[in-house]
Length: 157
Image (cartoon, rainbow, N blue to C red; front, side):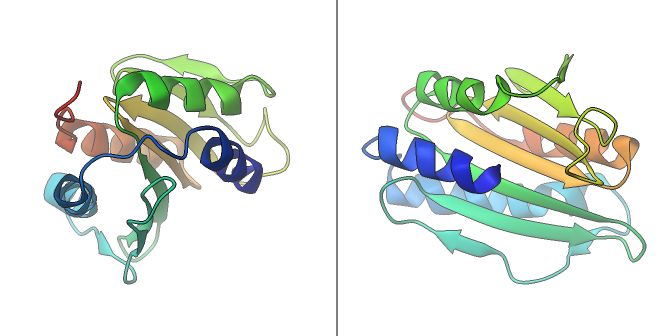
């Protein structure tokens, strides 16, 4: 599903990208967000990043030694484009609307999506779209709140 999501928005919204310096700083802020918010969490490996067109994106994994959290981050030029891409990915499966995480957030659990053994939250804040997962619903929710709290609005929003 993630692959189809990436392909769809890359094809449809390839020209909507923020400035290069803003991309790097947003990825850095997100990479530090969970360790700054939760004790004993650190990046598990070097993040993967692509600042190239069509859509700047990154993959970051954090761990506390027993749990891990994986996030895929996509940077769009504005909140409207991020909202369209979030909607494109959420219509095909049951999900729970979450309040208090970013501008819009949804939870997929292993019970509503048998293809995955992880809890997944997809949310957007400003022009940033985040797909986040872990094996624990509590860890996933707390991590999403940490990331959402660290994201600042893009200049165009």
